[in-house]
Image (tube, rainbow, N blue to C red; front, top):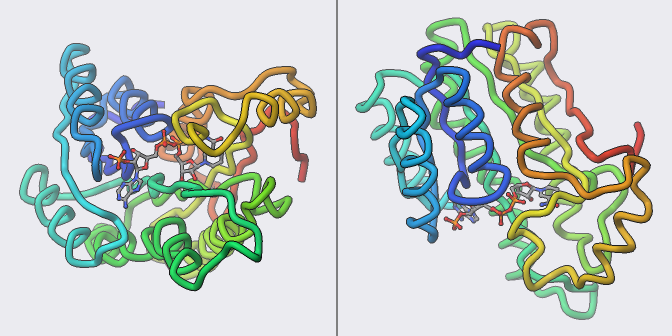
Amino acid sequence: MNLKDQVVLVTGASSGIGRATAEAMARQGARVAVNYCRNRAGADEAVATIRRLGGEAVAFPADVTSAAAVGEMVQDVLKQWGRIDVLVNNAGALLARRDLSGITEEYWDQMMALNLKSAFLCVKAVWEQMVARNAGCIINVSSVSARNGGGPGAAAYAAAKGGLLAYTKGLARELSPQGVRVNGVAPGLIMTPFHEGISSAEMIQKGIAGIPLGRAGTAADVAEVIVFLASPASGYLTGETIEVNGGMWMD
Ligand code: NDP
């Protein structure tokens, strides 16, 4: 799965799945743009880890819900390396668990902006230079919630991730004839800072009890599948979203 000299932009790479993906891509020889929003220290640590291993990485700040910020970030990456071969739309979050009585219009819009619109904004900023080379990969990080509607208080999040799964297919139809493969992963229960403040220990134990492989996933479990989707080994895959969930949901 050699990605030598490929330029990879990973959004939300200061933590969890994004950070593990940035590091896994670099281990395959890629040059990695490590995007972050608030956690500069996390991004700097990812960059330092990659450089320690002899790889190339630079941190790029941007709030991926802002078209202006995304545009500036992409221009900066292009200035650095001249092209972007792989875009991983990973940034996302379940900001709070809210049922219908607690959901405001503002919260709904925030969830859509962070978990769905962000991917469109990043695609919009990178696609032309991919199509111009008739090559590229876009990988969207969806969620098992796109399949099962989500856990408690996560319906809006699930709707956004379901939208992302459908967008992966639509985009694959549009861009694959022009040389750009578009795929996704749908992580299940993955132990990252994602769950801090929104998932109790009891909720996590209950989740694990329903996983045939008998454990929660790690960020690396997901990162390795994302690397596969970026590599020539998955050259005949497009429009596909791979479940990475230990069997918690089988589709
Ligand atoms: P983490 O909380 O560990 O990481 C989330 C990342 O998203 C951080 O790097 C954060 O950056 C970034 N981010 C959040 N908001 C923005 C923003 N506005 N602009 C740019 N970056 C932003 O969570 P995970 O690694 O677990 O989550 C990664 C993806 O996986 C998400 O899309 C999540 O929905 C999805 N997922 C996770 C699951 C799990 O169980 N962990 C299950 C299913 C899907 P910063 O801190 O710098 O602001």
